[in-house]
Length: 241
Image (cartoon, rainbow, N blue to C red; front, side, top):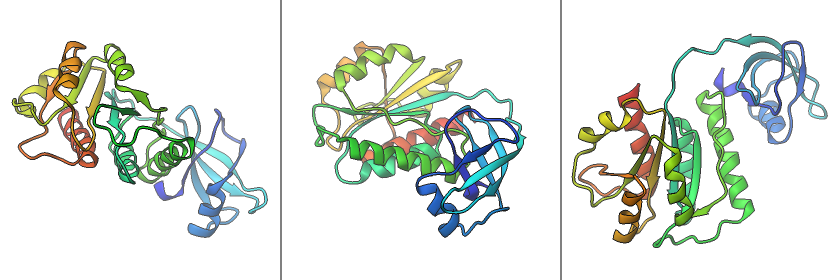
């Protein structure tokens, strides 16, 4: 039912009717061609999933919560992605694919060779809409936040909050398959750091290492910045899943 999945704000319970608002109204009525009485799935801010029945019309669309879906009891590794902001629409693809592959938070940042230095509110809100749409499409119960952009110095200060920081750099020599099983063993939270189109400078790599990051290689080929995050997320998911 992922195509009929909608996120709503707030924490709700069975028999409540929650409003369907914004672009979701158009998506429900004109893209999916749903109408009152059709069944959909609602996810609230508490990541609770409900079977719901559509009510009303375009003027006041809602969903009556009928049944709560049980959550699978699994331990999940938290993987956040720090991405040096790329130019053009590359970040759109990164946000979409990282969401599909389970990233819990996306942190845009600027570095020495970052081309895009300033990210306006309109672009940030666009990324957040993309994350929401991707979460609905892939069947997630949550929407990963896209944080406001930060500096490289601010990013380094966040490394201590994670059990492991995986710093992808084309100059690393040890194969990832030799490092990851050990680095992920017993970890509850991981930060994957991906550089800009021009890569990280040696000074940035040294600073990351001094702050506790593990410098990792993504293979013998140099990946584009929009490919690196999805590749690393997929590898982590394979190893831990």
